Length: 291
Image (tube, rainbow, N blue to C red):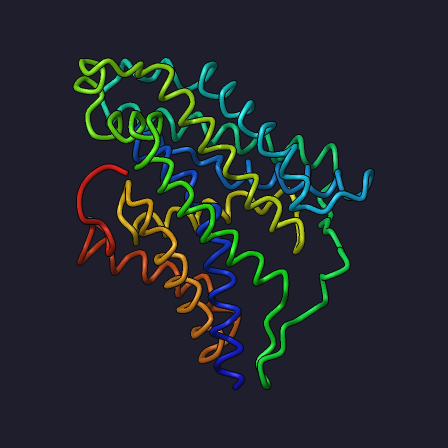
């Protein structure tokens, strides 16, 4: 049963990884922009959830009503001021430039977070924080269940949006071929602007979950590293594969903790990252290009 408990925590962690990675995967798949700041944006959203709870006693999941549109507007501002001008470059140059710019954003956000909230860890303690669902000897935290349900809901909701709504289909078309989408009447500028905003807004979901654990200025780059591993596992542009990649990474890390100890958790993830890059660089769950 101890083994099953480790697997359970692996599934919970993997779901959280997927929540961080899904926005980055959307942005990379559509625009070829590698937003290193995605994890730091989740950190900012996490602090937002903490502040809403501290000052207004609003549950982190309820405060998504405020943090989601706020993060969307931040994403729109970022794209207009920093990333839109990169569209004139080829894909390789755009990728390099976006990495440099977003890395600068990481440093800025970490510094501002440290100034505003200090380097100490913050957390939200709600009524159900210590509650668990008991299945025999297995204990599943309610916060973990919420994380799993949220990850599944966000990913399948995004899939439905992209495949079954008019604007979602426009985003999908742009991810396939910008020029062809433009010839078909798609407003590429508006579509990419909204897609970037949506990708950043999704970080609010991760922020809500992170606030129930620990939030600190330094966690952003760690979450981005996890997101990058997931994108490599799933394949660039594979939205649906992100959840499976997250579960795979979370479970393998949990097995690593169970077998060799907690100190090697990060090593296990990096080993998977390297092995997949060597033997299946297109990703484990990708079928075709695009989202």
